[in-house]
Image (cartoon, rainbow, N blue to C red; front, top):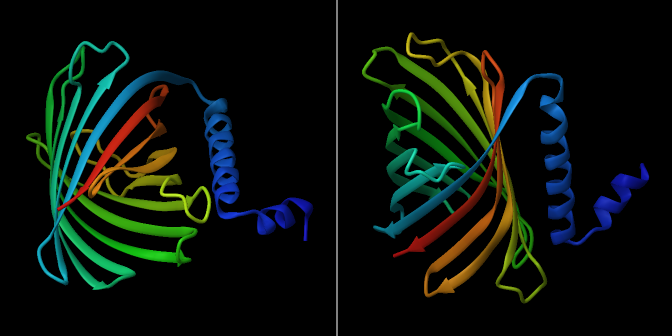
Length: 239
């Protein structure tokens, strides 16, 4: 076994998480080097509220706001309600709706509506230690210009406490988007974008947890590609 793989196998969960994060960031930096890429700075704030309805069902409401580096005002607003059915603790089915408003500093304001379906699953889990989860989401995207854009999103997430009794976790996740068809309003088939997040998850009060970190968003475009460097702050609330 190569030395690098031996070192990874012997590492503790947090070190593994950080090693994966470093590799992901290096790949993101190198991947678009062969193409023209515009770099931007943004700030994303999200509040995700989950309400347990029964032993099997949860209702979720996610509110997201995003601003660009001009900080002149809100550029994106997302409202995403959903309903989740728990087949078992390690497997869930979710369906929901999303309203997405994009109001760029220059250009036309657009409103997008999405219906989406998702399967969530646990890949690996150790009590009090490393947890690896995934989700696969299918979206149907609509605008006022007609035509339905189909897109699939695949996320993998790794989370691990800093030590055996720590309530603060290191977090790394990646989500990659692929369009399944072309539309007359701009959606196109093929690789769309990828997002990689590196941060921490920590308790605030009661059932509220805070997840701040750095998010790198790489978007494939017909012209110059776009790379957004994002300060991301997520509040996760359980009712």
